[in-house]
Length: 404
Ligand SMILES: *Cc1c(COP(=O)(O)O)cnc(C)c1O
Image 1 (cartoon, helix red, strand yellow):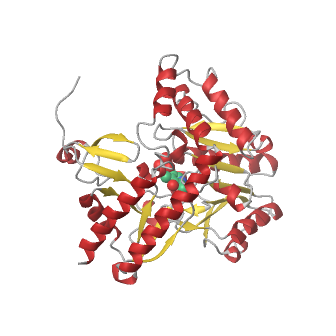
Image 2 (cartoon, rainbow, N blue to C red):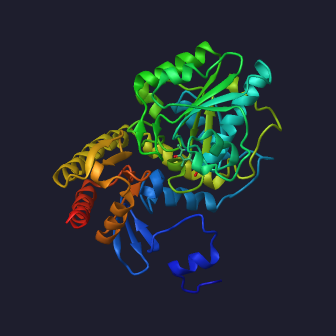
Image 3 (tube, rainbow, N blue to C red):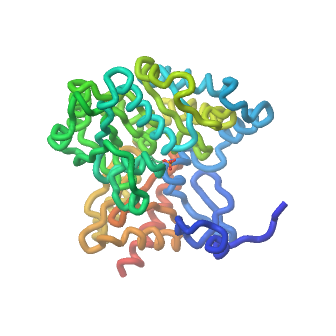
């Protein structure tokens, strides 16, 4: 086995240069603490980008993984398996869904959702009803279809031609959707209830309600991309519950496996009917190990006291960040529900979000950015309040130094 020591420098010699990772290499985590190769400790407010919803080394997740690892890992979809069936049943019991398709990443779950939307309209209406309406600044993944439906042109640059029939409206602007939607051509409207990557921008409740109505009026499917907003992040199992707007298709990933790669597309029995035998698939989708871990995540997160705890932790973190923001004049606003928070930089600090991330690392706290103007926080949903307090202290030290 290769046990040679490795360092960050090796990245540039062996990895495709599509990422720019930080200089430290974390090697161990427990709860909301992480240690790097040199034994330096960090408080983790990144949560693996809204993935590690139960923190690191959660005993329940380790137990679920180890138990399944000793039974059976993989069967392919030539056979079904017990963990996949149980997880699908659980997701149907807890949500609007009646049918579930498993995938391995958010992009893959969205790919399935967009293909299903097209196939459904093709089957029930005809091939002309294939247009997808999504939103500027949206993020839906990096496959060619999902990056085309996404609303950040820079991610598509050089990869064209993109799939056709995709239109981008303005987020939180119903009128802009009305101009694009039609009964003849539109098969789906795709939206993140809270735009994550582009700066933690929540949809207005009236906007999502209006989209539901527009979709109903035009026989189009409403697709919620809850890859980032799902699995307890908002203090609800899924954000659609908070908005009281039920989609036809919902995608879930990131937090679903708590760090183990797994994703799901949830939908109704009627819509699911359009992905008949042989129309779509995934070798690893519904993998027994992945589903066993996700089961433990969902069983844990869906407890009312955990979801209520998200609200309390959110209040603590939000008021702490607003306080720092005001005292050092760095944040104009802290937005987002639950434990998906976007701290919006003031005029003076525009474009400098990355500096806050780096200053945080120097003080032993890991934060995220979302674009160049927003510091994003997406910690474990069960981060202890003492860790939040200490993280705020470290972040304040970082801001103090940055603004000195
Ligand atoms: C992260 C993200 C994706 C992509 O998920 P991957 O697992 O990276 O493919 C899609 N949609 C949203 C809203 C996301 O935040």
